[in-house]
Image (tube, rainbow, N blue to C red; front, side, top):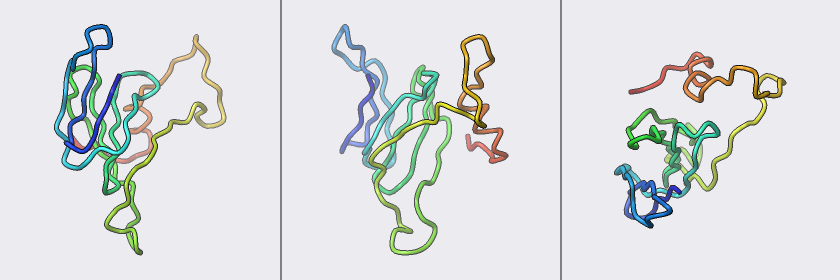
Length: 116
């Protein structure tokens, strides 16, 4: 289970123990959290439109994405209220016997650089 909140801490919980397994300090208030479909990353949406990705194992920072308008009234950002992922890529359905690209591979396929 993953959680985040007003204290800007992203927490990975051990459900059976009822304790925090790992945590990471985020720069802004966390408004939404989710695991990537492959379970390898944790995503934290923040108050001013930033989305941070952390490796699920140890909550090590991976990259960030600005999800706010570059101009207009929301250019300073608007909180991220939900995170979802596509289940289909390029019109092809994924099958268990096919190679499933990781989230990082898909991000790199877009030609955008990944910040470390």
